[in-house]
Length: 224
Image (cartoon, rainbow, N blue to C red; front, side, top):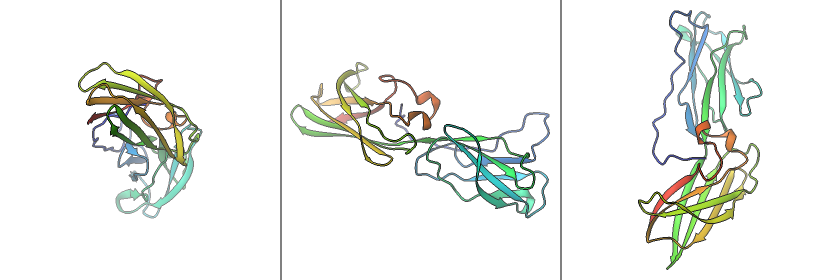
């Protein structure tokens, strides 16, 4: 699993209609297609031909995507518009909106990708000793069983990362995992990477971020 250490500006719009195709009866979009766990996403849209006061249903299909269930309802307002109260999915989730009076009329599904919250830290413990740590806030789906955390280090600016330690992760609380290692750094200024493959990995983040260690990881630079 990989974390890109840069802020992302996230936005999403309602799916575009195929050129020449008739507009769907229901269209819906989300305020963000990718969020961190604990963040909210809003679902809004419109009904092409429905009287004001028509009820619409928000349906969710969370990972492992075994089917949609209704989680909320709203009433169509002026110009056919509707909006649901914000929701906070705890893992990758597909969303759609259906007409209450005509469930076969549904919007195209929209996938919201939910990323774990990752906190990396390095702490000097004296000459030749540095504690590296990672704290992950994640879905409780599939639990938080202990897995191996692989710690790699390199001199600052060098692409040559070498394995320095392998330690177990542990669950601090449901949905919060932690791992640490005490290592002898290769230099005063260094970068480190930590790779682990938790049981919940497939339920969170984009598919491109999933893969076996050591190719997918979290990373941080340190200067002592």
